[in-house]
Image (tube, rainbow, N blue to C red; front, side, top):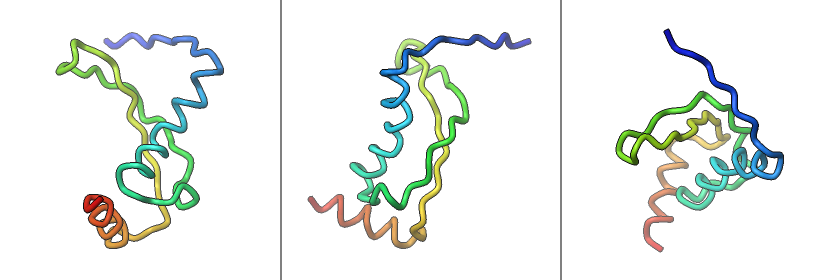
Length: 79
């Protein structure tokens, strides 16, 4: 049986945690931040390749089509 553990996160880090997935899409794919919905936290994953370090997994939606995202990503990779 899994035991749920709750961790207090100071407010100063909360904003960074929620902005992180948006920043990643903007920087790595080239999607505009106004096209991205607020991220939803799916849960945590224990990353076994980094000595068990936990990572947060988010779901977000964007207003662009898959084809538009592919084109943006391709253009971004050229720089």
